[in-house]
Amino acid sequence: MRRCHVAVLMGGRSAEREVSLVSGEACATALEERGHHVTRVDAGIDLPEVLLRLRPERVFNALHGRLGEDGRVQGLLDLLGIPYTHSGVLASALAMDKPMAKRVFASAGLRCPDGVETSLADLLAAPPLDPPFVVKPAAEGSSVGVVIVPDHDLRPLTDRNDVDLDCRLLVERYVPGRELTCAVLGDEALAVTEIRPNQGFYDYRAKYTEGFASHLVPAPLSPELYEAVMDAALRAHRVLGCRGVSRADFRLDPAQPGEAGLYLLEVNTQPGMTPLSLVPEQAAYRGIGFGDLVERLVEEARCDM
Image (cartoon, rainbow, N blue to C red):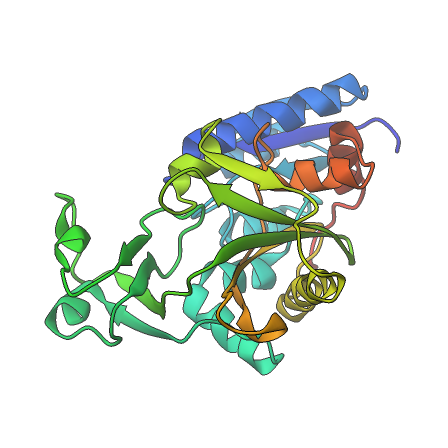
């Protein structure tokens, strides 16, 4: 692609700020090595003014979590007419809102764990599911705030000092078994990775701390099951209306035969681009170097208007 001025949005104000800074720096460096003029932008409340002053030709969105991943920054970029990477407003908002995404997935025949949207206050008063179950914020990423409740002891849900009893939560049936993930680039599923945390589950620390989890790519699955995961990831990408790159996360329950044990958990429309991230790892497995991956996303950047 021709060389251009790219603003890399990173940091921001979400709980995933530190990860976003690492992702953004990696992408900015890769683009500079390809000869592009890159401006690193730590996205704050003055982001509209900063972008109007810089007037970049394209934006690489390396933000994670709220504001950067939920459609709001995408809407700003649409209004400013600056082409940007990854999904647009609607797909970003749908994927970030987990209860809504589950409804969309169900409409496409994709199997998800049984779940109920509730508040923390209602959950503490009367749990909507029998344990074990998983409690997660209705709109966060990178496993931020996820708690596995193995029994009737709900004290782990109130251990923090900043507990908000009115916050929206998704309570899902806990699916035991294997953790799988599959990235979609453009309109093609890349590969399936099995993630094996060294302890506990694949939480925020395991995702972004070296040595806390092993990645097996390609995942050791039967050919039929491997293709089923790839197909489900692509269908989820399409039904949400994603573009650029996304990553779908799954659980595989070994107690159920074949595809019957496969459950879609969620789709991430702004997957990490850190040295430990899964999408660059799968792209490399398919022969796509990190620089090629980043530049391809910039080349395909566009507005939704």
